[in-house]
Image (cartoon, rainbow, N blue to C red):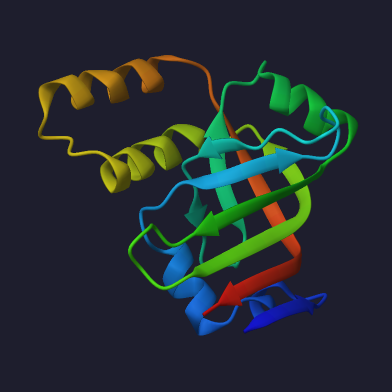
Length: 148
């Protein structure tokens, strides 16, 4: 089943099945509009926030932030892993670059994606938290999905 949805209200864009997939510790693939042709998605950690936005963190001087400042359109695609029935969700819209909340988000995501009882991973997180970070907030304007 393929379905595409547009709506002015982010809370109404995502179905319960979309939310279930996006709440899992899966990698998303971020593509920014102002990038090279053809687009070059990058794997990212992400969080579906309670307000329906998709949030991630990155360094303030990264190429993706520079591109988003020129053109704030982006998308994140998340797919179920191999071995499960085919299911993916694509969320696209405008991204805001926020100065606050990035370290808290990074800590939550590290706990979601890594075993922080592993000393090496705990040190990796300390390294992330020692660097400047910004929070990218993707405001959904379009959702595409496929489930089989």
